[in-house]
Length: 408
Image (cartoon, rainbow, N blue to C red; front, side, top):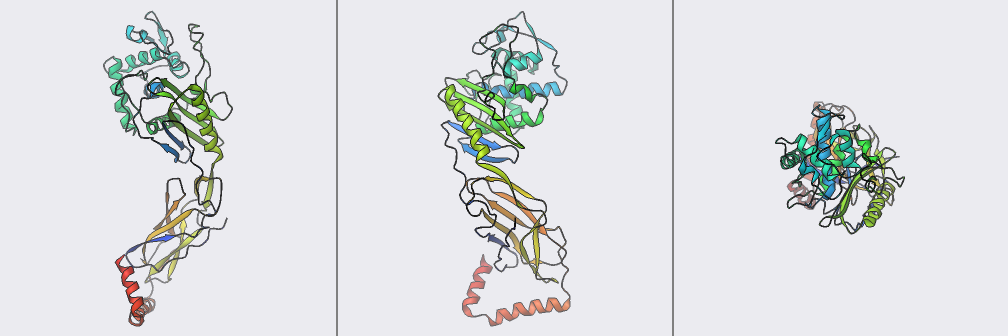
């Protein structure tokens, strides 16, 4: 598509210029897609492919995560497997503490020695609280679940999770055991990116461990059976937290990751999760809005062989934007000018700021399309003479306007 030229206001030397794009600049939409009106107490939705935040509702509130916090236990276990600290076939003992857990369990007892690979499936598919404790005690610096919880908190902070504190490995209700939806989404993204060999376990729908629990063999993730590209990650529910889900789905090259919590029932969780996935894929699409090397606008030059130089993008600019189009996306170019020559091809001179309504702004560097040499003596004298002539012949009103521009 043709990218219209941006009309420049005459730039002032050493003054940052903010130049608004025309209404049809990007041939995209001016009003963002309708925000998803989720019933969840808190929610966070990102397009993992582009990093675009699609929905943020109380996303930084530290809330009880219930079993969704098992993802942190799994992440540390995956790291231990990667680093050789654990082996998939290795069998771990079950302590009295691990066996004492109620709620969702694998029905382990102290006579068991359970393979790590079975414990992983017991956590992912069956949401086993006892399985979490077994792994926690094996990996804990001091052999206790409490010690492992401290390790979870430290590792979460290292991953950039700023609102996560752990008191146990399973999400069992405990005062101060909290995570935010942003943290859960970040953690899910790390699992998907860092451990592609283990991630397929999250899409397994059944796991019948040793035939012990016929009533607990099915993955609780309601999206896995819907054929909408869902392939993970973890549900959660306690009376305090309500019903929640950390989910992910893939459609073509796009992947969406989200976390929701505080819903009233499993049915409402399923309904809201499916609606989020459908909304994220149908209402947004990746679009190339500027091609590499395509002139976006010009930057005014000072004392150069040319008066201006084309500004181009170093590579294609592809953004996730609402699919409903009606006009243009707001954009502006920022640079300090006029820019003193000489200028080299590829030299970064400006920044294109793209501001789709309802989505985060994107900043893209713009570079010189070609070389522009410094002007010769005659060119420089003509430039200076023109400036001086303009100064001496300007009307009072023009002088006041120019003075005001200089003050900005």
